[in-house]
Amino acid sequence: MTSEPVTAVEAWRLRRNWKINLLALLAAILLVLFLAALVVGIIVLRRISDNSTPHYADIVEHFKYGSIGAEPSSGIPYAIWKVLPALYPDEFEGRDDYSAFGFLYEEDEAGRRRDLPVGISQRKVRGVEVVWLNCATCHTGTWRAEAGDAAKITAAMPSNNLDFGRFVRMVFRLSTDPRLAPDRLFEVMEEQGIELDALDRLIWRIGVLPIFREGLLQTRASLLPLMDMQPSWGPGRVDTFNPYKLLQFGVEASALTPEERIGVADLPAVFDQRPREGMNLHWDGNNASLSERNLSAAIGAGVTVESVDHEAIERVADWLGDLKPPASPHKPDPSAVERGKVIYMAGCASCHGYQDGDVYVFDGQHIGVVEPIARLGTDRARLDSYTETFRAQQLEKLFAGTPYQFKNFKKTDGYANLPLDGLWLRGPYLHNGSVPTLAALLQAPEQRLKAFVRGMDVLDPDGGFVAPGCAPAEPPAKGYCFDTSLPGNGSGGHAYGVDLPEAEKADLLAYLLTF
Image 1 (cartoon, rainbow, N blue to C red):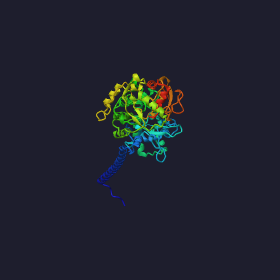
Image 2 (tube, rainbow, N blue to C red):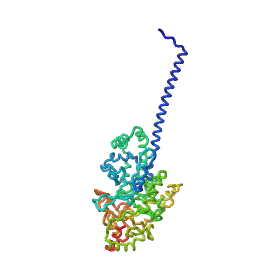
Image 3 (cartoon, rainbow, N blue to C red):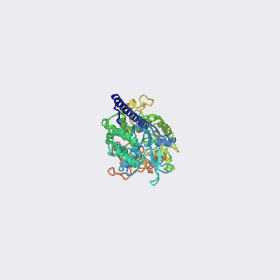
């Protein structure tokens, strides 16, 4: 049986049907691909548009772990934060947490170490969990009555543990280190129990890691040259204003005058803030507005005009307004305290207020007033770091056009007379932490220790913390050797009470230990 011949018309129809079927198949494939891409796009979009912040009902938890808005502009992805100890065991002294840099860890209700240290908050930014600093980073420390005691973590006291300069230098090394390449990073993430699916890995490769490293490179290029010009900060100290000259206003470190390059100072206590409204605040008294001081400090922690969480900051500020320091555990002789109070009231109270039993009295003719550097005689580097040029930029640019625009900053000629509440927790003393104990502060400047150990938290019976002498060329086994001969570290000045007879100094010290 033979098949019938195909006519030309039928052959054309077959070819046309074949083409139509092929086009239909291609259209179907394209439609499927489009729908798949659309679904993937929606999933990706949902992931990268997810922004959320944990809420802490308890105000102390909020202070220690709540976000103030620093993560979007300055933070480290949580997954990277978690794996850095494994990637850099030498930097972390073999530990699996950040205590090597002085970060403090609390335990949860089950007695387990908390995931993040005090002062590190977490926020989801464009679908990625990110961590960075909050107020408690600089304003939470520890103390122990005896060397064998467990450390007491105390909110609102100065951080006496955190070596922030060393931590920042470690973070800067990430920007160029090959160990942070995607494949190596993903491998360590898996070892640490952090799971990323195929889509997560794609997002990290093309988005998260390039953006993080690019931002880190820019910050490193701006800030590291300045840090290289300065002596090591050491624990409990930070440069207050110079970093945001560079980061907020784009000033080159090389453009800073030699006089303004070293603005490193001690981290302050932040107890009982409400009575301070209207006093000259910051070490040099350059602002009398608590709200502006708080926003300025938040910028130092990494927030920007766009990312700042005003509500979170104001909630902390309201709590700190009436937060009292813990009572001094020192038990000096009551009769010596009474004699010392008479000496103090005659020579010190008008500048600093005074302690009356369990209550600190914020009263004095010169409290909160700026004492001229020519009379005070302390190291002037922190004062000189705050310049009139910088002040003008603050007032012109920061929060411009908003209700938060700065308008109260001023340039001063000295350091402010500050209240001394919680004095027992605030060692070392002077604005740059250059005098280890209260007893040493009553010595003539030339008799004060030239180098001593910082970063300790055992109370010294002479006020402040145990701070043995040290040799700068020989780092101590524990702590940091603070050298007062280096620029910005001078321990001269504030020679008040140094000429008192030794018996009267002892009585005055007894009274000061009750603050």
